[in-house]
Amino acid sequence: MGNPGKSGGGGIGRDSFGAFLFAFSHGYGIGTNNRAELGALHDTMSTCINRGYNQVFLESDSKCVVDAFTGKSSPVWKWKYWWTRIKNLRTRGIFVIFHIPREGNGPADALAKTTALSQQHMSYLSFTELPHSFKGLYNMDALGLGSLKEI
Image 1 (tube, rainbow, N blue to C red):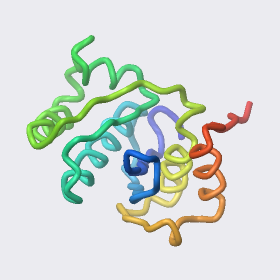
Image 2 (cartoon, rainbow, N blue to C red):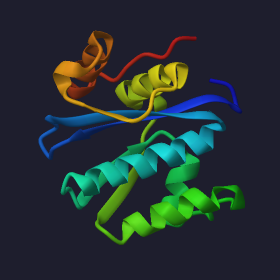
Image 3 (cartoon, rainbow, N blue to C red):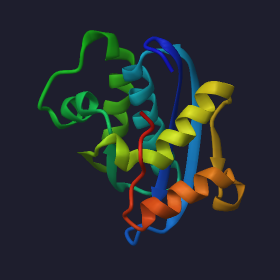
């Protein structure tokens, strides 16, 4: 929500068949888009480890973060704090990351935007606790339909 501006992250955990496991969101305060992406990556990895998932496929719509994670580029110095934490989490499991277009990240993006506006702290949600508007995006995504971006 601006760069820098209000920021938040969100993530969705699914099993190998695509079934819903958990969702989370976290408000990060005023920051850059890259700070939000790093926070969401860290929170996703941490949540997976805490729930006993140690072989994880990650998806992110930030090519910059994905390239740094895979070693195609070096993280910028401003990322040092978060990058150190992410590197430590990587030792606790097998994490593979893929870049996806923003249109393929609709449900997580919706959680992030909602949290950025409200600046809530992290919450772990069951499917029944999620906002109704999120459930529609999630179901479309699960069917492989993606989401449309407003212009």
